[in-house]
Amino acid sequence: MDRRKYLNILFLYDQYSVLTNTVKEYIESFSLFSVHNIFYAHATNNAKCNFNLELFDVVIIHYSVRLCFDLLSPHYREPLQNFNGFKVLFIQDEYDYTEITRTWIENLGIKAVFSCVPEQYLDLVYPKSRFPDVIFISIITGFIPIEFENKTTFKPLKERELAINYRGRELAYWYGNLGREKLLIAQKMHQICEEKNINSDIEWDDEKRIYGEQWYDFMENCRATLGTESGSNVFDDYGNIRKNIQIALQKNPSLTYEEIHQQYLAEHEGKVMMNQISPRIFEAISLKTALILFEGNYSGIVKPELHYIPLKKDFSNIDDVLNKLQNDDYLIQLTERAYQDIIRSGQYSYRKFIQDFDQVINECVPIGKGVSPFTIHEAENKQKNTIQEIQYEIQYKLSEIIDMLLISIKEKIKAKIQSKFPRLWRWLKKLKQQRLAKI
Image (tube, rainbow, N blue to C red):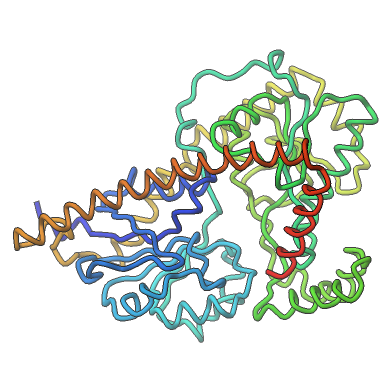
């Protein structure tokens, strides 16, 4: 076997981001499905780089290492700049401080960027004149949950306790209309369900979010879930839009979103159209849970009436939507068609995603250095790096356990404070909102 055909790839990520299923699965998919040797290292905050990057053929920087927010550990910056192998960046939320990301791409010598910007807008966001030697590949934000690819049993409609569920959030005004829609669909549908006595569980406060396996149980316990397009169509290159809105709200906290949009966002909204499909949509389809979605593009993947129930953004067709929700035969046909077209096709699986990634890497790096980081010539180095390999694995698994324990403890503490000390809870919530407004 020619070792040089199998590249040694170092995958840099943020270990504190693996609490979310989609992030965890995204990271793990590389070691599960790539033909190459994948090694993981935590690389944010003050993480140390205690090994020689030149042992690797390729270094990947994952989107959890938010370059635009300066999360990359300072101990990795110089080694990455000096690394003479092939450097890859996976990036999301590219509308945040876009110019900072562009500068990182230049300073680190990134050679391939897997971007969530639709292909027709890539040159607008990353001009070829500025990045002549960088490959930009347009991808979606997430894929079908790995554990559901071959799922054979599904919870029957008659056993699902909820008619509609949803977990949204109130995003900052500077994310524009796509961000605002996550709140709008939640608030309006919550009101409609209460008025019509529809059994639902719709929330948009951060403390009501659900993680881990509980999230999948939640998704499979409803007839339909709500959804909107993901991303933002307001690109804030230097953070000036964000800053101006923060100043305006500090001066006048009563300003509405509509007033803010007209004054600060309207001229920027829609120059780049992200309109992405969310991983939640794949999760719902995987569980044969029907989708009630605002009308939109959704990366061109799901189609109205074929794969989801379209909801107009003015809610003018809500009666038609609710009638379809009550029709078992309609929902069964809808969810089955979506399942066959989206899940069974295999086009949106992590396996297919990594196959496409491997193809790009094989074309860019046809042959490696032929040296495994954990099989070095000297016996001492071999032992040292084998231990290091184990340490990375332990570090990754421990981080998952710790994160799950922390969230469990956190939820119990929050519940206790809410019930025993309501005034303190309101003060803490207000303090959190003030802190988020400064970010």
